Image (cartoon, rainbow, N blue to C red; front, side, top):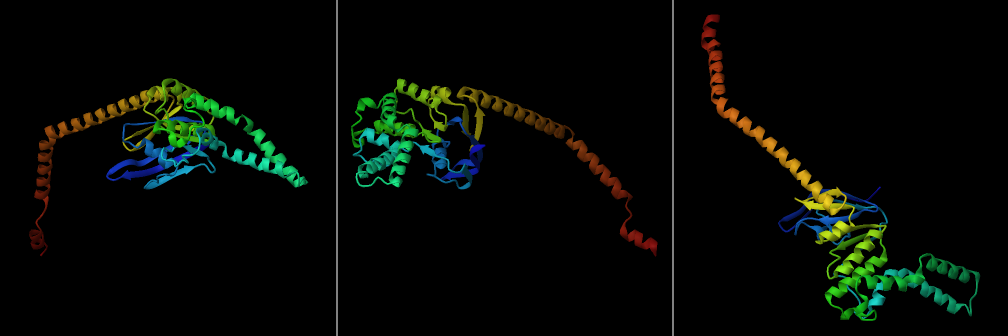
Amino acid sequence: MSLLVIENIRFQIEDKVLYQDASIVLHHGEHVGVTGANGVGKSTLLKMLQGELLPDSGEIVWQPNTQVGYLDQHLTIDPTLSIYDFMALAYRDLVEAERALNAIYASMSVDTSDAVLAKAARLQSQLEAQDFYRISHRIEQVAAGLGIAPLGMQTAMGQLSGGQRHKVMLAKLLLEQAEVMLLDEPTNFLDAEHVTWLAEFLNQYTGTFMVVSHDEAFLESITTAIFDIDQSKIRKYKGSYQQALEQKAQQSETQHKQYLAQQKKMDKLATYIRKNGAGVNARIAKGRKKQLAKMVPIEKTRRVSR
């Protein structure tokens, strides 16, 4: 069953048409690289998929209740939050559940009713089922993998540079484990070892993701399919980045051969017309002259009938 269907979308910025009757389908578990020349609309596609932009026409339909995580470079962040606390926002629901549980425990000195005990039991089961008590360990793992830990986990977000902020936002997105991740140039500001770590993380990711990246080696290492944007269309190729390039080259060669064959037919027809056109026209004129000669003039016909 499809997770996402893009059907006949059109999108234009000023006088440039990025998409014209573009269609594509995304399935569960696909790891997709979005490729194309600069300016064809790769980042624009991700913005449209998470609702930041709307197509001029056509449809973008997600399967109902699909959780989509997006690496938003323009997200407003509380500058007073520490790096650790910002990353912990990935587990906001669980943190709230723990707070509610602690509040119940604090109130048990005056209320130990069955309803209170049952609510505490539900919250405790939720925290344990989602491995809440390993949150700190997971945060530390991702922070180390992306090179964030040396910044100091208690450093305020407002003190970070743009590149450092980008890494922390990426870390939070990875921790959220959304059903679908939309990643726009995630390797920006990452050293080679951190790119390797990210590739390993994504290869183990059981969900679906779409990645825009100029790093061809990175795309080759993580993709199971490619969405290539070219001439205002989106074409899907199965396999890795290199396999997609080979498929695209083969298609281009086939189309070129078909074009040459068509041109050859047209040239042959034009040559025939040049050689035989005058003779054909002369024969047609001669035939018409003979037909006219056989026709009886109307006035002559009238005189005979009298």
